[in-house]
Amino acid sequence: MYHQIGEPAPKGAPYRSLTVHPASFRRQMRWLRRFGYRGLSMRDIMPYVRGEKQGRVVGITFDDGYRNVYRNALPVLTENGFTATNYFVVNQLGGGNVWDYEKGISHSDLMSPEEMREWVRQGMEAGSHTLDHPYLPKLGDDQARAQISDSRQALEQLLGEPVTAFCYPYGGEEPRLRDMARDAGYENATTTAGGLARPDDDPYGLPRVTVARSTHLVRFLQKCMTRLEERRRSA
Ligand SMILES: [Zn+2]
Image (cartoon, rainbow, N blue to C red; front, side, top):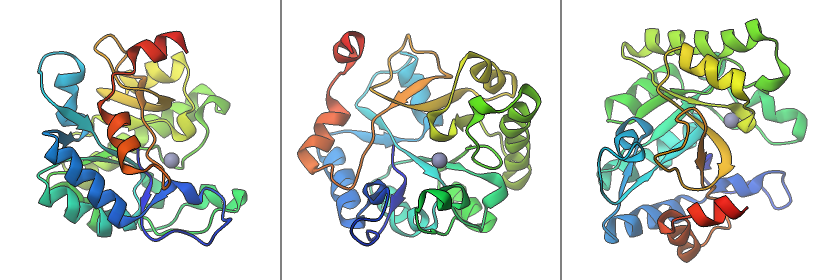
């Protein structure tokens, strides 16, 4: 789970840790490849998660659809032959991370619809991160359903292809929201729960591993390659 790939915000800025330096990202992808791993989008990795396919694979996701991911990560992904999923906030395409401002997080541009289409044209996946990035558990059923379902329809209209990946903003999920994601036609949904996905996981509540600015290379490789099942069970 990545967010932004870019130069860091000034020291002391809130959530600065979620922006990974482009050179670190490039190193991380290269080392995955050297170890024989392939980075894959949610669409491409689901057969492995379900246990239908075997191989050395790592799912790569980006939250929020930042323009700096388009600029700094897309070339690295393609040069390594990897795919990845970016989760877009439909009403902020071409806008910014307005939901972050009240926390003091600085503005960062989000991809325009044209950039999102180019992201997809280069083999990457566009998933939904709702219309407005709300904390879904706080919303009533109708509002939550609109955020989950209408965002999928809007993205499909913009892209002209099925959208099957969903991501809960802030990792905010509960059983009724998982049901809504399934009913809306998604095939998988990711949370912010930490850990590696396993075949018996609910595909509408898949855990992820955070990669932060401070995650150094060895730890990154450990995080990607270590089976965390035992740890998760005992946690
Ligand atoms: Zn988000």
